[in-house]
Length: 438
Image (cartoon, rainbow, N blue to C red; front, top):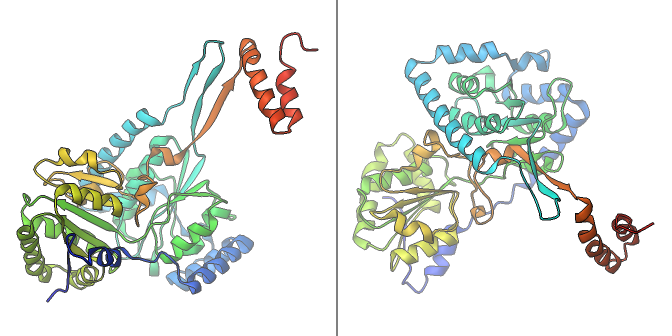
């Protein structure tokens, strides 16, 4: 029997129970933090030699040089040609949709702009791509070709000249789908290294691995800790927590669909979170029954069960409006609006990594091939952060060209404020440009 929390917002103890559901500590184990710091310092000091030692120790993969762990573009192409025609077609179709979406994103918010004011002064912003980025992709038996597409393609669309991928291959086991995805996505260089040592190599550079400007992509606790430590040396996308889904339902979607959507996140790991918000008690019971019936058919049933019992919940709300309010408090990574009128509720939803509108929009479509990026903020950080996008692989420089007439207008303003701050040099630099000033 599955012990899945069922809450009611009308209950006196709802707030306390709700907080228990949401509670998750983002604190990293102190032993992990210490070990990661040691690895980073060692790689920074000894470069290739340290990376080779850690790769042999942790991934059981020995090599005479780090160059021997780099995969050529020909090897990526060979992997692409070795997978099945159906897999090739799926990869290319997903890549095309992801690329199309991010090209539109580039046009909407990734271009330089400027204007001239009434004095002829030019003001604007110059948008340029980063020179080199590193993408981290989990490897081994797990296959995450979608992560390759979601990280590499927006970087490519942004115009990044060099994309470096690192992917661990424990025991030398290379996943052909991951390598094929790197080929399709246009990755420039690929190294079969992983863990904190790979993050260190990308952040500090070694004799073989070039230093990058930013590191993106998911990883285990060691990778997440390493990314946190190297931030400042390089940029990072985010520190991601366990995966999350929140389904906001009005009772009109088949219960089996919603149950499987909850499973789609619960199967990631035991700490993943799956929550249903719905005002219809009868429908909640139908979903619970569907969960009980379908769970034994799932290959990862044990993981799903642990996730649902540990962090899942079925919550009855007083109304759909209240469900929207609670959703905003949670600020989930994935938010499904499983309703007959999803556009009625969408304006009320302020915080979510991605919003999936309507019964036919399963979160899994967004993970693989809908087009928008699946690298999303977790653990409530959707309150202040955004999905990975083209803008993450660009930087912006302000453009200022003050005309002679503009200097006459702006100079006195700047000087007044500078004198008020006690910065005479600032004030005089502005005043020197005023007409009539010797």
